[in-house]
Length: 502
Image (cartoon, rainbow, N blue to C red; front, side, top):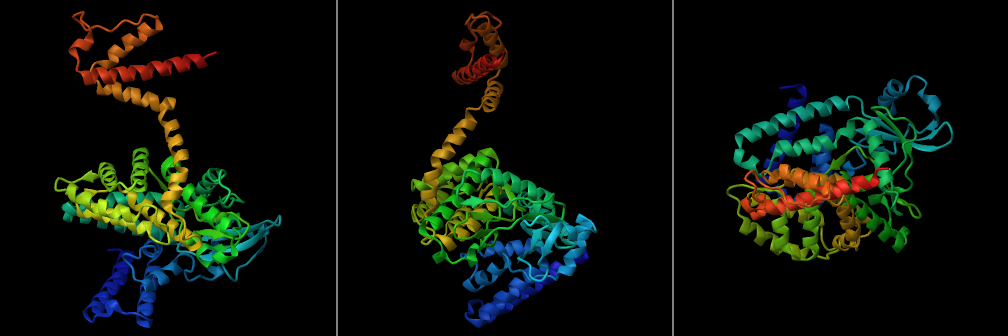
């Protein structure tokens, strides 16, 4: 076992032993000062373990179904109040990545008090040589190696669990879930990738009045990122009374709409929009910062999620259960009837509820829990989507708790459906569909060639089989239907292509 693995095992072992002692003496229900001290101990332990475990604490801070109030309050500090390190720790990184003359790039830099101290980096306020205010993000030395070691340990652990508990793995695919998480965190260790994410996100926010992304000001390096300074404070430090009602609801609606489009149209979304990563100020759009963690969704999953939310908006629990089941993988022992009953009882509590009345992230978690309990494996990306959704919900709740998620979804449904229709009717998608249908219908490819040849020669005759009889007589109705659909699509593509030729 490596030194890092022994250290992690030791810290987690001590926490588990302490939890066991508290449970035996009834301390699990502690309130007041004892609960706060215990929560602080857990938070400091997670902080000492590094980025992955800090991310776990951040996720738990949005989960009141699992975590008591004292823990949530303490874990909130992990978003942007990790204990800062002195600037002397980060100065060698600047010298190595920007060169010995790095001070000439800045007119001034506040090295005494960082703007933020996170699990992977610290951010300092600065002024560039040309007078532009900036934020300088510097990676913590050695954090990349620590993350690589943690990834290796977690992958080995997931494989061991998969071999030791195949029934558990049939419902919860830990290796696949870790793969999704690790892919999403690529930008955390390489700020060049984070800068690319910011530029992409900047283009995607151009249609929104109340949401934007900081600009990348200097060429990024692997460990140093210089970006424009976001005005104001983080959402959870902001006073909603300083904003007009239109500003609050505008920011809340645009944040949700931007994330909905990311989930369902762009299939590219901020995977960590917790309250510390959204900066707001009266008279300014909300700035969505820290693009190191980005999620991607496969097309079929995103379309199924649209249908799932439509079922929620329509108060259709049975429809949601069916969509969720089709999106995942029922095990041979799955209790589908029980899952339908669970979801049918849950959905009426969600429809049209405001953020003040209901925690939608907890509701999503409840569906996941019911699916797992009933033997249905959910898509691995759902866990990351759930984290992102819960983080966003927690952020918007601070500023505009009266907003309804389903109302905002319905307001954006026209844009989402129009985008999906354009995608479905695109030439590339039509070609893929035509080929899939041709492959699905035995013998249809040769027949398709004959029909297209006849179409080109303006002779719409039916293809014949080898014995001279019409092939449709010897094929099933389903094959005939698939072939006709494929040929219509293929002919439309050829006709469209010919029209564009000079």
